Image (cartoon, rainbow, N blue to C red; front, side):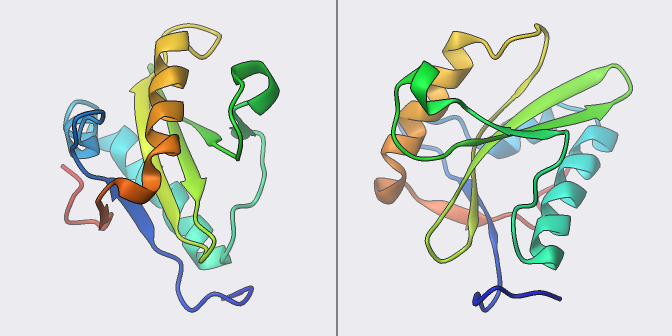
Length: 137
C-alpha cells in the first residue's frame, strides 16, 4: 500500500447538525448495490493512499461556485441509479464525505452544490464518524 506520508487514511462522514442531513439516511435510501459501489470506491482511495483522478471524479469548480478550497465530486452509477458524492480532503489525508445526492439532471443542481459548500465552510465545527462497512444498509 502506498502511504504518501499518512499513517492511515480514514473515510469520515459528517454527522447530523443544523445544516446537515445524516449521510446514513442517504445510504438507507439508495439500493444496496449503489451503496456498495460508493463504499468500494472510497476503499480504493484508502488502499491507494490518495485520491486518484479518473473519468468519474471531478471537482466542484471553485470559480463558478465562488468558494475557496477543493470539493471533489464523485460519480457512482449502478444500473438506473446515479449518485454524486461530494467530499473533501483534510490536511492529514482523511477524506470527509460532506454531501451526497441522487443525480437526475445533467448539471449539478444549485441546491446540492450550495448545501455542500455550506457544509464545507463549517467542517471544522462539525462532528464526523468513520465510515465502515457496518454503516452500510
